Image 1 (spheres, rainbow, N blue to C red):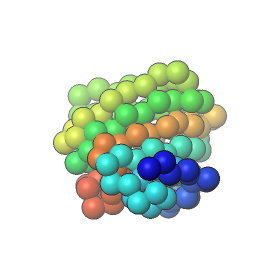
Image 2 (spheres, helix red, strand yellow):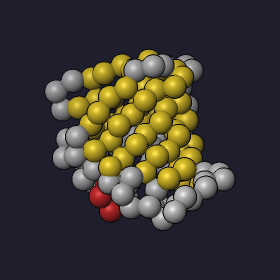
Image 3 (spheres, helix red, strand yellow):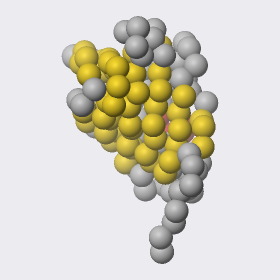
Image 4 (cartoon, rainbow, N blue to C red):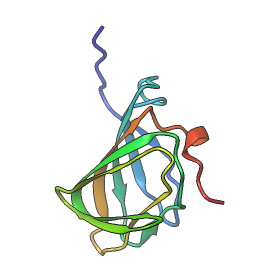
Length: 120
């Protein structure tokens, strides 16, 4: 059965500065546990704690620059770039440039605070 999503739900974000998370599909907005799809808008200088999630995360940058740090590499994603982070891989996201970043995050299964395993 089709399920229309009229608008996203804003979710509180982790990090040193306020970041906007608009969940369109996921555990909060659509009661969907199989996948989550959210638009993120992070300001310049934003950094979130590292995490070792139990889900795959697929990220597509729409605007600005998003840094993605793993234990072995740091990637600087510009608009039009995408990255896949596999479950169980440590990762840290940040937007260090003046324009910040806007991006889409897809998590499979859906994002959950209980399965993201953020660093202390």
